Image (tube, rainbow, N blue to C red; front, top):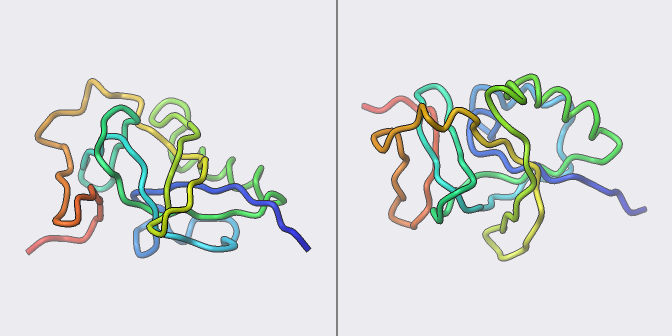
Length: 136
């Protein structure tokens, strides 16, 4: 039996281990580490991604069964404040083992609020990655 799915790329509070991981309405078929391009900003308790830029943004691809698509998207739209705080787009994402997917992801709308000081810098592996773990 072939199950169709929709991949979602998440890079912030919806990732495993983050504050909104438990708000997904359905268990994913699988979760894979992945990257996309753009620019990532740290807004404190959550991140902002804009699709312009060439940084490698690290996150996760959550594969949701198509039968759960409508409810999942409605729930994520509410969490992400779509369309006033975040916009929903489809963009190419690549898993760490090289598989390419067109994934749904949320990008930040209020770009005028973003400053260079908020930009997430690449780690030693060359990826920009947000997490809400306290430092110190």
